[in-house]
View 1 (cartoon, helix red, strand yellow):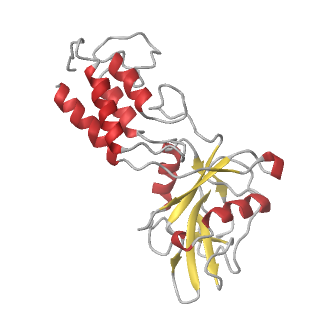
View 2: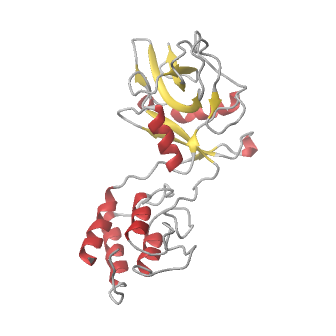
View 3: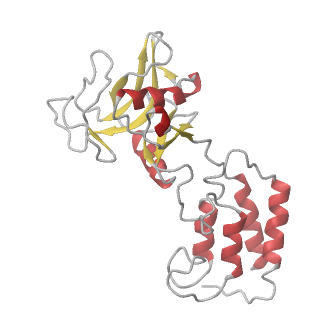
Length: 261
């Protein structure tokens, strides 16, 4: 049991952490929120991007005004986020705009932000939005290689950009696996689970994020699923030190009796 646990823990080393988050500070006229440009080399559709943003503790970015749209664009003004669609045009990352109840006869009606914020500002490129069955918002450029103009698109990977932008209320959102509440999911959270492994605990115990009253595989899975998320970009643990730390933490459980569900 213990050997399998250590092997499973070592397997988490291959998980890639999200990149750095950039604040739009209130002192500069911003909202104080944090933003992250996520690169998807093979592209992604809007639904998957939206799900990933929520799973990371945020939401697809909502450009509710010209200043916010300008700020978001600075994060994705890089060719790697754009996919050429012709000799003179390219598609950029997804934003949090969509049509929850689309009118099949009017492509410009029914647009909303995923947050429910008012839809009052728009920055459509010329001639957009056009097709009434294209119900998702992303950046699009015609002429320059990158541009801050908008386009409506299908919920598909083809003809869209190579990524999306996530907006967070804080730099390091509280994730289910962040049991220590120190801003990132790592050794401290793993230690909390292992220290109470196999025990029945009271409701609300931080070692039991699954909330089933028992500290075991379900709780470990939650920590490993979020492993490395929220990690400050200046902190890059080396695999060797991680393995040693995991072995040390697992060793402290030798005195405990491991129970299977």
